[in-house]
Length: 72
Image (cartoon, rainbow, N blue to C red):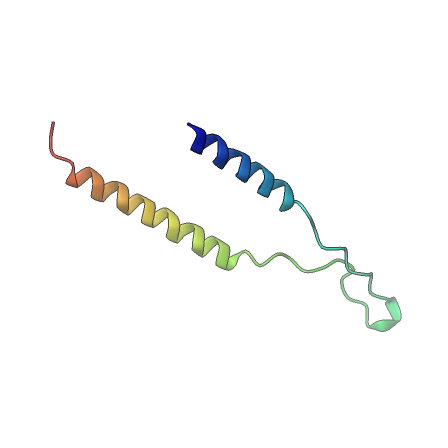
């Protein structure tokens, strides 16, 4: 039980530190070629691949454990 509480506290503290954002980019001047004022989007391609790989691994482990378990 103590391990679960410690894990929860660590995750809560780390979650607060991850809320920081980089300062906004300065706007582009009109005589400098124009272009978008805001910054680009976040690169989510590799994050999605990582999430799918972890989900597939977790599902595979669940299937493996279900087949390994003897019938009751």
